[in-house]
Image (cartoon, rainbow, N blue to C red; front, side):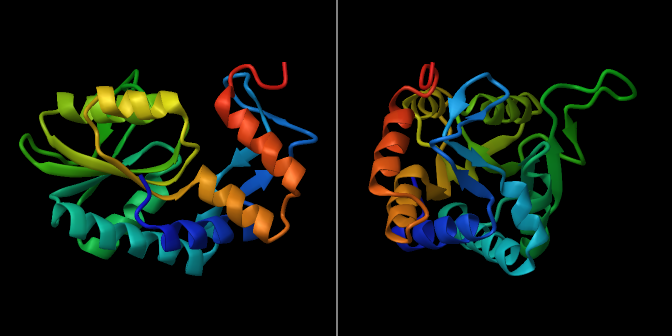
Length: 213
């Protein structure tokens, strides 16, 4: 679920302006999963643009405080959300930790890096939601550490049905600044893509795992 429509529109426009989101239906990208995709999203680019990263930081902080009050800790999902998660924690005056995809193989073998205590309330910051699998592994690691995960906020979601199902099954409340449907509407209106390309991008979202094969 998006925070609100105005925020989703502004987020989409900002991400398109700096090429954090690229739309190329005629020459699809290949994701690490092997999926062919007419869209590629790299929200880490936002960190290189101070006005945009500050906008994201402040929108996250405003929503987190409104929805959850002030949590004890902000957690970022490695590696994409470490930077923006740290900015949110700094802005809110809160401790920060980040969660690795798996425990380190050496040293203290931590999966959650930073100081955290059982019983603390945590909000997780993520940069991008696709299937939700890696994001929810971070939530699982935090829960195993004995903390209370209040919810997750993310910059952008593709809105796949599988991600909705995964978050529901894990009982995790997710809200995002931007989403796929709003992005397509704005990209068409601003002539980043044609009406025909809009339809192609809509079709991809229905069966992303087999599209283009």
